Image (cartoon, rainbow over all chains, first blue to last red):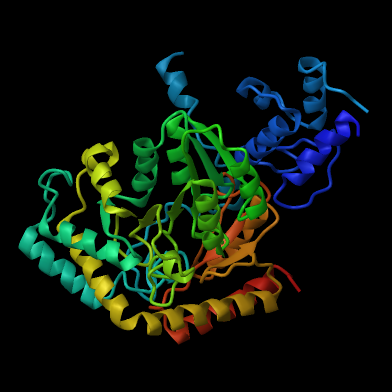
Length: 81
Length: 395
């Protein structure tokens, strides 16, 4: 599974309701996630990748692509299929 | 930053209210919660207040308040640790505790304050607080003030809660926080399952029963009665300004914990106690609940079913809920404003919820029909909803 797919899976599994989205979907403005919904996803990402996401980075996240890019930058050891 | 700039930066965006020439918030009600209520000299049907059992303007409650005002005056002008600790307060604390199934309780000036204060006194930075995604703002504010790790769980999702509890071993203490009845939609937490999970993982359950006390349970005693939970080893909070039709908030728990809070909770110790007339009013409400809950409850539920049925038949989309709350689900704030304005123009007072009170794209119009409303009033409301549906061309 690619990094992109793993991130999309984490988001999908941690939404209140099923929704159509892709890597470019704005999580807050288009998917309608509130601050707690974002925290749920950030916590799930921390568990999935065994990392700690700082508040500053969390606030910069707009979409799944931002998460994937941040993972590649800060966690270069992550293996991608 | 200049002082003028600081103040000018603190403005509210009222573009939506201006666009629809309608602001449903802070309207001026000129009567008590009667049937009808008065707004701007006009008669309105009250489907907005949390007066579930319809006891806010009950003559017996008013009489008890009057007698207490005559005997004790307007206020004891002191906090519960000082002169606020008067006989009516002490008796009511005991009675409320027994009512919901505890040994002891303490009464705060508001439910919001009780929820904010409890976590500051009990939780520390090394703890973990797991909280329902849709928990009330007062609970969220309370847990954030602690400064510890906060993990929201998906709304009423036990699988997700279990997953978070399984990864909580590193924390000193773990609290699981939720509401009994989620007031914007009327869903009820599977609190029996939450209590079991807390036992399994040695976590402390905290339940806010503000919309459950006096509403659910066979005799109106709230969530613990509703879910048949015995010997609850957790923390219970509730507002006393909803079905119990007065003001204030309560916290109940085992005696030792309440004793600890009585001397350690700044939100309690440094706030003026509720005034004697309010305490007497609540006693009167509890007397009525004891004798008449089944009649009042039956009427409350019947009105809920009539309103929900009529709205569905008329083409409105409702959120599914198990409490006596009817919530119209609307697509966005614009639709919410338009629909609320139309209902308001037909002299029904409802509560529109828009973000941040609800998640984005989940605006709602909430209605609670109190047991004080007459059958005739409900009939009138149903006809108005049919008319509004036609105007909105819902079908």
